[in-house]
Image 1 (cartoon, rainbow, N blue to C red):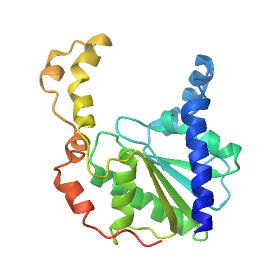
Image 2 (image 1 turned 30 degrees about the vertical axis):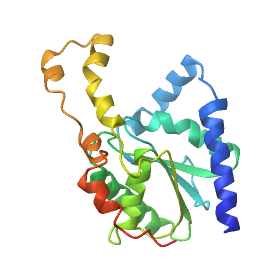
Image 3 (image 1 turned 60 degrees about the vertical axis):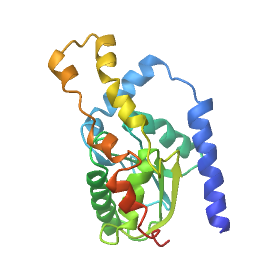
Image 4 (image 1 turned 90 degrees about the horizontal axis):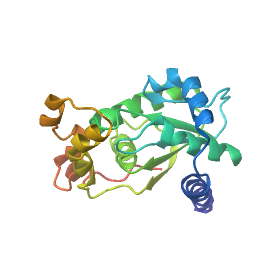
Length: 214
């Protein structure tokens, strides 16, 4: 109980630091980091810290809808200031939640084979919390070794906001100078937006599952 409260306090502090206090970094620094991480950006999965030696616990943080690795890097850096090892997990953010959960399961099982002694703490922001839940609450996908799961702003009962964001794509395309008419006309909701709807079968089935042990 005390361990969970302690970790909760640290993660809340990291989240506040990342969201409200850090601010925007200089553009040239962002560009250099984008260059350094160009290879990582091409690959979805678990991104372990450089020179990771099996420190425990390992904080695995998952992004939300229409997000990715750049949005997680400040969280990772904030964790490092508190001497916590943090590994972002990325996935196609508009793709299927089921497929993202399967990828998370595969990546964590691979990690556990190499570092069976490491305790894992999962932090899911928005849709990332649903991906983490689906992985942990399915007995076949649960990798084991996860002691805590924290969800931040996760729509456990669903949300229409993702569908609204998809519907705005044509407007964003025009603002960005992209005038591909075909893409605008066939702007169908993404798999993730459909699965995030409150009435989706995925959410109904997920909320029927018992909480994962741990």
